[in-house]
Image (tube, rainbow, N blue to C red):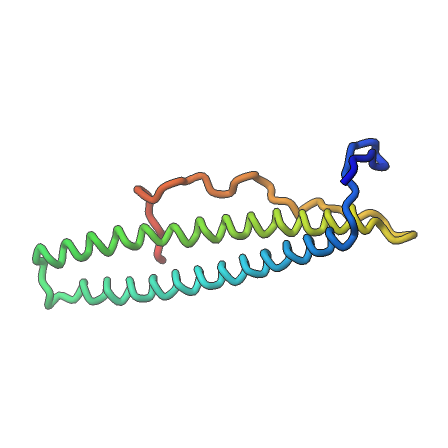
Length: 148
């Protein structure tokens, strides 16, 4: 592919329309897959929270008393609930990545296909994420999840 100057004087590369269309289709498939992944993570987190609540209710049964085993189980349960932050962070990253891919797909289509005669150029404002990285925590050693 050969480099050329665009209408605005910025260097660019001409891409065959079919290559751009295939790339845009692939970006859309990835966006769809990320949406499905987000749904699976959300479902799993909901089920985990439901099971944690049931375990917590069982551990709060006065008949169990305050044995060391019950105390350890409660502590382990609290630590496990903290791990649910993973679902929230993963959902934020998936949403961020989806926005980036969508903006790329739309821009690719607009740049490759051009505007129809009498049609205004598409605006990409609001499509791209506001921040380059929505999640800054890199490990799950500390923190809490508000359950209610």
